Amino acid sequence: MFKTIKNIIKNLAQNAVLIAEKELGSGNGQAKKKMAVEYVVNNLPFAEPVKQIISFLLSKMIDELIESSVMWLHNQNKQGE
Image 1 (cartoon, one colour):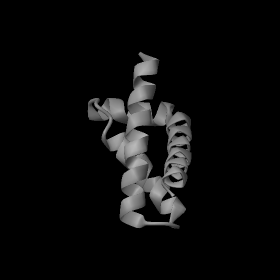
Image 2 (tube, one colour; image 1 turned 45 degrees about the horizontal axis):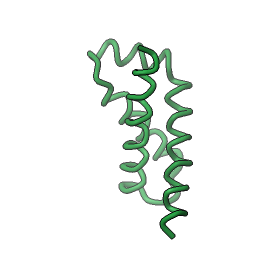
Image 3 (tube, helix red, strand yellow; image 1 turned 180 degrees about the vertical axis):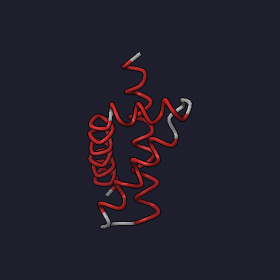
């Protein structure tokens, strides 16, 4: 089950990073990260109380997956150049 949750969060993190980049553009790193974290938590496919528990217990993992998604996006952009 943990692996399933991790995969869900990973996919949400990638979407969140793409959306934050489109909406806020380059720079604004802290604002984009905050937006990405909120996106991930708000879009978890669980009831609201469960979302809050997951976001609290897995906040470090969520943060790491967002950072990983940022690196993924940078690599995608480099390959497209």
